[in-house]
Image (cartoon, rainbow, N blue to C red; front, top):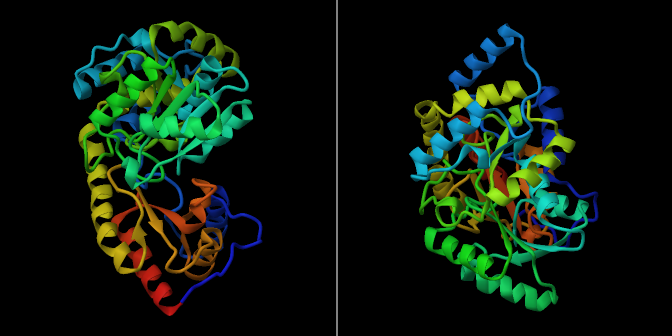
Amino acid sequence: MFSISKRSTVEPFHAMDVLAEATRRRASGRPVISMAVGQPSHPAPRAALDAARAALDDGRIGYTDALGTVSLKQALAANYRERHGLDIDPARIAITTGSSAGFNLAFLSLFDAGDAVAIARPGYPAYRNILGALGLRVIEVPVTAETHFTLTPQSIEAAQKKSGIRVKGVLLASPANPTGTVTGRKALAELAEYCSANSIAFISDEIYHGLTFASEETSALELTDEAIVINSFSKYYCMTGWRIGWMVLPDRLVRPIERVAQSLYISAPELSQIAATAALGASAELDVYRASYAANRDFLMRRLPDMGLTIASPMDGAFYAYVDVTRFTNDSMEFAKRMLTEIDVAATPGLDFDPLEGHRAMRMSYAGSEAEIAEAVDRMTGWLKAS
């Protein structure tokens, strides 16, 4: 059996290290399968590619307004009307250079240095890193079966009491990375009400919307006009490299966000905005891609436990399985490194997402093709048995 009695003392092996090593091995001719990064294997929708080609042929690509083109913002408003029954003023929408720029803009506009923001643990590591880089304090709130793997008013209160620090902001992702948790409408409403009652800024990361396979998908905008919603074309729309996202803001934050965006980014790339506008009409094509993720999800839900990899949280949405690897190791970094070296399968060590308990877990992305996921599982099955 593969076993490590204590945490490795080698240089930490993080998600981007996994990706870099996987890329290097693939370039050298190795048959690498990557389950490490949340990048869809499918291309951008045909309509987006056609719109981008036409724009390139025209040749007039330049700056746009800092908060984006009117056509993209109007198309997004129409999308919210169709998907959520919401009447969103396009003036409340800010187009960003990916969701990462959205987080920067939100944090800079909402908080002062030293303010504290609550996030889930395990959670997306960029939250922690961006907040820290901006001089903000991070309160990591454990999400467990007891809290239904999401943030709750009670868990945030307990974390504040334990730390002695009052939070100024709460950041929630649903569906969540790495856990796949979808926060249901009732729980989301309770969190939004708690934030409102306590003058806490509520930031809702909805970049995996469209990729919910169980539970109910609710936008925070259905519950309150005060939420700051951040979304992206990277996941459901399969446009990671286009670096295009958006925010929906309360009226009072539109101008402050615009002023910061003008200084930091000038505008999101116009070519990407043109492609994104077209992508919003491609749901029929994108739902075919979504069905392949759903098939991968169902396959992994059956096969991972058979291999001894316990699914550690609900696989409600996004395209991740967060698994307990303690049957084989208590060092997920070394586990990831050996799996890539020995069977050319890349996955992400849990310590990226949970600095305290992540040595017991791995995140496996099922955004690849069905054939790739099946082959990766076959390799892992034989490897774990041989170990």
